[in-house]
Image (cartoon, helix red, strand yellow):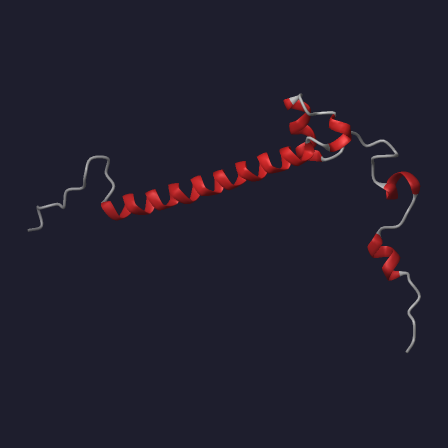
Length: 100
């Protein structure tokens, strides 16, 4: 009996491995479908941004959908960087504590 080997199907994977692989493929496809759904949902919403600037331009639409701002000038960029304003967290921390 030591000379007999259990034969595996063509491709070298067993049915259990095949089922596990199929399950992983299904999860990956669901994740990909979910990601694509969210990208299309965001792009639909972004079409109205900036007065319809990127409505008919797929490249601009994709860029705005990923970054949500066109540039980093002093009007669009971080107010802390350009105007010296404190963040909301810092404003809360430096607020005077009211005693009861």
